[in-house]
Image (cartoon, rainbow, N blue to C red; front, side, top):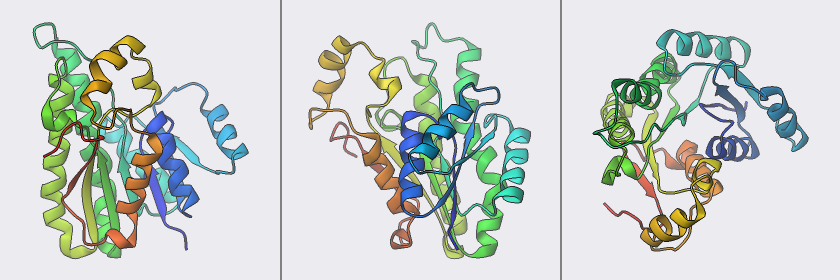
Length: 246
């Protein structure tokens, strides 16, 4: 029986690549989207035209009750969740001097609280079944910091602290918990950065001299979700073209 993978924020550039990769490997794939998000039906139809039959559920991952209700509905309608990819995230970039409490809270709730909110209702079931994969998508900036991203960097660093602690608790239960920390990936969000900034400020920091591809990150997610990765847990795997090595 095919395993079920839930990818939060799966309609974005990176999330979509993860959904496609997992489906291509035979997983049943479910994604979440923000309540009220437009064009969900169009996205599902386009994916279906490409041969992928995804299910999409509205969920405010920053809200505990919404996450609980979403997971309950997914479990009821699609089955128990075997692989959880905590991918949803936002940015509200500005210097700390200019940052207001709302911008701090929004990023922490969406990028860090969401990891607790989504993992809490699925982890016990994974432990009971003796198999599970929890994969948290952090960022290179959670390790090295980034100008104008005290909120984002704090949230992404916090994700890996969560990963390590939970990995210890469930290591003997057949459940692995890992972090992936991408560098600059050629998603719509990154490609919206002015070309001059990309060419003069960002790409010169990357030894490989290019942006990463969403498919490259998706391939790493697929590996960590596999049986072959059963001995990998509590890890933070960098995929940043050599931009930051630690």
